[in-house]
Length: 285
Image (cartoon, rainbow, N blue to C red; front, side, top):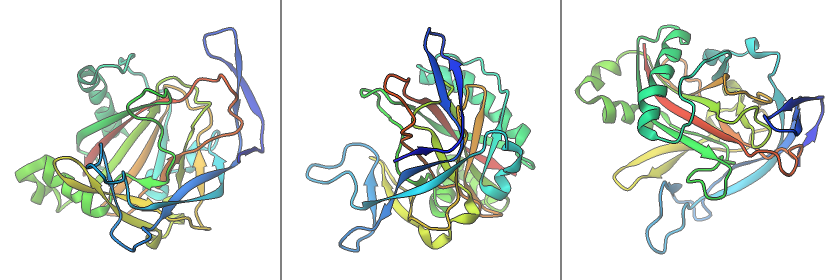
């Protein structure tokens, strides 16, 4: 259940229909982690699970939380303090986001420059993958409505070894961050907005490593338990020239950002479903 507490702003989506962007703080149910009933190590399969196995062995714990709108307060948040940060007015030459190789050729260099220009101390970027999410029922990936963190300390360090090879031991002696660069593809976002928690408000004991089973290897993501101290935020009506930086790992300060899409009951039938891309990068320095 979501309740609006502030005003809305009308915007035209290139059609004759005006859409009012939901603005302001809102209360919505987020889906949190619940441990496996048998007490076993939690796991999930990235792709189709083996015959007879479920997709995951852990449960869900839905709970209502207040989600605060950061629109107009963007400067109040710093990725090194809160675990997330914002960038506005970003131009991109990639328009279609339908061809993975073209995305790597055109969009990846833009993301690399964005991170080098906006992450203090960063001197090298390695982008290792991206995910496009569309609300269309036939889309390979849809918005994830479950509170999670993409990496744990163990899996972030393993990614350095996996991607950087012989350089890994030297790189691991210095600061390494793993950052997701998130943006909409059909903004302004009026459905399935992305929510993220202030890293400082979620205690370590509420972050649970979960085996992330690929066909060729096993990594780790993190489930997030409900915490009454969690302070959740979103950026209302995100546009295509805006970026959220979500820090999943920082070897120096430890800031990590739980996040989840959420269902906003202010979204009306017929409004466009959210389309987005998240690019994941190792940030050195």
